[in-house]
Length: 400
Image (cartoon, rainbow, N blue to C red):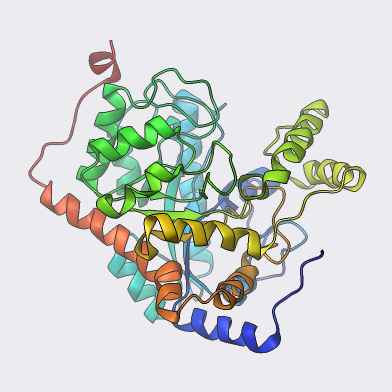
């Protein structure tokens, strides 16, 4: 059955709710898309114009989607290593700052929960940054501190490959969680007030981080493993620990993480990309031509807002309404659900949740207040730890 958009009156209710309680989206890869497509030339991808031919994101669609705050991912691929990964991450940060400078009437950089609230009050989209993968710090706690000073407010401990100090969900276990240096990274993030993001990490790394952390954690773009058995999703025993930790799990929209039938299909699509000499995560126009040709030959299983809502229902049941949010992963994935094709689609998801009896108060927590609270809690934890000295530990010392 094809996706049927919500009735007009239901969509009006969803949009009215988002006007009062806009979305804080936990993860958008627009900076990486801009790097790959146009080398950060913002004249070629002017977000004030319609960019739907190239991107999931532009200013008009952010507004149509009711997005009030965005964590822009300053991701770099894991084949960027050492100082190359660090410099590329700095270029990603520079891109986010350039976007905010270019569109000051729409975007405003935010580093704190109060700045998020102030941007919203002034009608701006609060723009925060999250580093996706600890390879971006090259095993250097001083580099971690530098990223924080530049405005990065979460770091995903790994991306798709293991680090020397932490296991990824999509790699073979080596450390079986965090090493001693990995634990030190978590403690230093707590001291700074940087959220520990546990998307992409192995379940053992999740559990180790929850054991070590003295602040709430974040899952910037992960859904429920009990609903879709993919290693990128969160097991129930971890979701059950979020109320005690105070953290927030932000459901993602990536079809292969939310729809069981999409897992094998995406594996075949990735193999096709590699056969064409392309990286599986490449979303440049030439790469997307290859993807669309494969999709035409092999029809794709379609996720919808109801698919995401199934995850949110489960996550609310296990973790509680105070510990869930939204992290679409737009511009970081080749494929998106029907009805959630781009950042303008959030009202369709809210409409679906309204049909399932979610209250206005529950939806306000999902879209806005849970994410603001978790960042404020990280700031509070850092204030309690302010007398601790910055760590000068080195991986060679701790993991010899």
